[in-house]
Amino acid sequence: MPYRVKLRMFEGPLDLLLFLIKKEEVDIYDIPIADVTRQYLEYLEILTLLDLEGAGDFILVAATLIRIKAQMLLPKNPEEQEEDEEDPRQELVRRLLEYQQYKEVALQLGQFEFRERDYFGLGYRDYDFSDEPPDYSELAGQVSLFDLMAAFKRVLMRIPKEGQHRIEQIPVSVEDQIDYILQELQVNRQLLFVSMLQKLPSKVYVIVTFLALLEMMRRGAITATQSSPFGEIWIQKV
Image 1 (cartoon, one colour):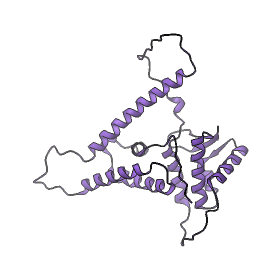
Image 2 (tube, helix red, strand yellow):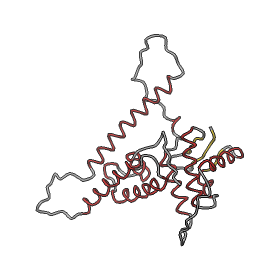
Image 3 (cartoon, rainbow, N blue to C red):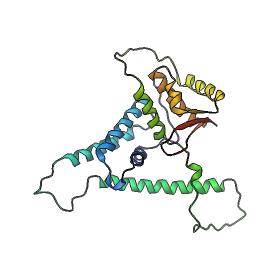
Image 4 (cartoon, one colour):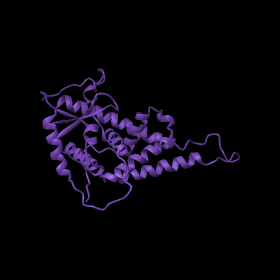
């Protein structure tokens, strides 16, 4: 039974790389390619499991990471080695820095839109861009797709592996779990993301409930926030 989910806020493979670099607090100019590749492939496995729209783009970047890792592991011939030989990671670093700049500009434009959407100007207005940079504190608690996936991955790792595989009809649907989440939010003003998933009876329920949460976020029915970067995630009804 397929559960393909398409999200407006779906982030791409470079977002995942930036997320891992920030999460591990490593220097973007000196990426530990082996460790980042391992973690990237773990997230790719989850993306494939969930069958999220656009997951194919992540496979291409995974191949790039594996190629860079292989280049760095290959022994270099001292006779052929040049002093100015480029680090295999440099092209990836350039792409990440360029992408990061585009994201920052997009965020600033989004802030200008947020500020001005409730105002109607009277004729020409001269903007002074020399003021202090915009305050992004309003966005500090926002949760990315990869924050959710990181917490989801922790829950999956705690579920005991089954010794045998059984073929059976999936006992629950995304719409069923949307109703379940709405009922939980009627009782509690907000839900702790990890605790809610851990209460579920099986791995199938965990996966389908996670997809239900993503679908509800896509519809604008719930929001996910965290008090600090990589902190606990709370689910609230809009």
